[in-house]
Every structure is written in C-alpha cells, then in structure tokens.
Image 1 (cartoon, rainbow, N blue to C red):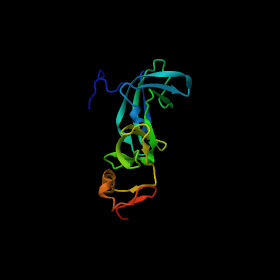
Image 2 (tube, rainbow, N blue to C red):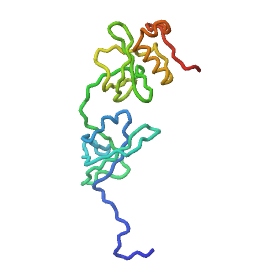
Image 3 (cartoon, helix red, strand yellow):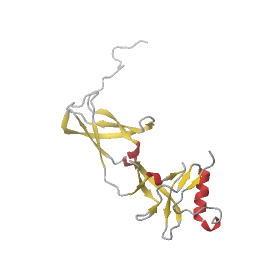
Image 4 (spheres, one colour):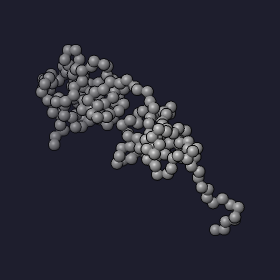
Length: 196
C-alpha cells in the first residue's frame, strides 16, 4: 500500500469534548428519558461540575452486572478531564409518585404481572398490574392498583407454572364453580404445584 505524504491516515482526537462511559443499574432505567439531564463531577475537582452536551444508551445490557451502558459527551474546554479518571454521574430527575408494594406479592408469569387483592367482602381478586421498577424488595406500580387496596403478600400461594397461575386465577374469578373442589383460601396456604 502506497501512501502519499499529503494523505491523512490518522487524526489525533482533541480533549474537547470527551466521552464518558457510565454503568446505570437496570432497576432505574425507567428514569432515563430523552429529556434527562446529567451532571458530571470528578474526585480531583470536587467543587466543579461538568456539562453533558449529549448522551446515548448502548443497545445491550451487561449480563453480569445488570447495568445499561451509557455514553456521555462532556464539554472539556479547560481540559480538566483526563482519560482514565473516575467520575460521578448525577441524574437530575423529577420525583414520580407511585404505589409501592412488597415484591413478593407480585406473580410474574413472564407474559404479565399480577397480584392477588382482597375485596371488601373478603374475596380474593386477581389484578393485572404494571411494575415500573423493583428495588430493595419493593416494587413500584404504574397501573392496576389503587391506594388502599389490600394485597396478599405471602403464605397463600405457591405457584410455579403458567398453567397453575391461569387455573388459580380462574378459580378466584368464579369461586361458585369451584366451591366443592377448592379448599377455603383464608389463612391456610394453598399449594398449587404441578408435581415435583
């Protein structure tokens, strides 16, 4: 391969802007929106913050750490930021009100998420819900529940297959059809296993 002396084969990239890679936990991915704003700080300059000009999420999740990889372009006119530095990433977001329930109350079939509630007459009522996120054994609910609903947390259901879930939910919807075949679901656990 012949290269003439006036042909550019490589160009040294400047230090302004710089790109910063960050790992964002999968559990807070719902906070990342097109309008999200970030601030960067580094231990070397604790009183200084750096402006993020633009950012994007890489299209895969780290399977080991369960984090999203985010790349941020940061203005660095004074070249304070150097390759290899550690940085702190602050996501500026408005708080969002949501209902919190214990995560163990959620029945996840892989296709949908449900909880079992107790109505005013003491009957068990399955409800489909949408979980926004889960953290520290608490699930934030986006839809499907109302404030004041009573949710069954534990001790009543051991369900380990979609077929069992479907059957159990159907029996709860139509208790009069299964009165003789299904034990009372008050304080006694109902084990619905497919056979182990």
